[in-house]
Length: 96
Length: 416
Image (cartoon, helix red, strand yellow):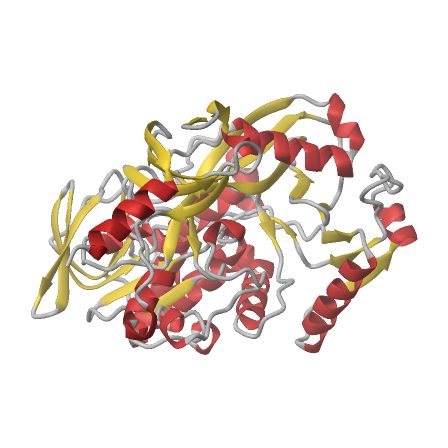
């Protein structure tokens, strides 16, 4: 498997470290209920199919990436910088 | 047919004509008292114990492919009970005890071989950790011996004891550990369960779980609807997908683990050895191939095949431990899909849905647990309450905080 890093190009997956599902968003500080934290920390959809996930290019540009990969075939559909995804999410939240 | 020395001799003179199929390949009935989803080791063992211990014989085991096609036929066959934490210790020791009498219990040669499991240590700190683990085992009546370098050298002289980075200082040995012929475990439990009236239904994939008034009433399958008073899920690797049918999200990720077999060799290593400075374990099958493996690939996967980066990592671990391996050729390698749980420990529990039971989250240690898992899951289903041995393997432990994190790495499934 190779991951097409937006900064470094097509690189072997051995250069990357995996964190997990990119979808869970940490519940906000004091408003976080135990049930919401349980969902965030422990529960996963774990789909057999397309999966948005966080990878870290530790042996390259050291960027965090959001990779959309099919868990049945390891085919990668999309790779983007995680910071862009995070900023987009924050921008969404900021809209009153 | 009962297997014995006499039956083998009789058949030798009759041209082996009278052997019958080992279990009935049943067609589904309209309904059952209990349906076990998953015809792997744990599912078949559960059906066996339901019939044998609890007298519940109107049971079906549904398998989407053929019996033994999942992880029961795709592992490195190691059994041991060298655990440290309270929830795990009695459970895995029960499993070890059930392995020791398995062949008598089910009248089947599973080639249980207590050849010992030797975990090597390479640093002073690791020695202390192993001493603690060994003491924890001995307090609980489980055998453990802390060996120094000379004792290890006497057992396995061909390892790289003076490796510059990872010198072998000694090891923790559990002599009662060893290996069991994995396929024979599936076949033996299938035969024993079938003999006791259990229907083993192959090529029957579950496509839905039906509920009425919050209670399970049956399952939809590729071979039609089958009614059931109780349904037990034992489908490690695909647990999340089955749970999604009843809108449950599990604390589980599916990951791929690769195992390897070398070309056949003369007897070379008569125990199971694990490398302590990386992740590598090796034993020799009775056919002669070295069976070895290492870490999971570390990312969600249902692909049943790994990638080269992990294969390289396993080989590096092997070479650091045993340089002679470099002359060998790998015959084949294969991947299995693991239920990696969030604390590295399994789940055997009721669910919030009446009549639905869950056996999941075995990470890559499910094989050694097969007998005790079946024993405990059968008890949980029959009594609608867990056995003392699986009381800690609750699904709600992630909510209450009573997690069993043997490795101490937190909610990060790919690190367990």
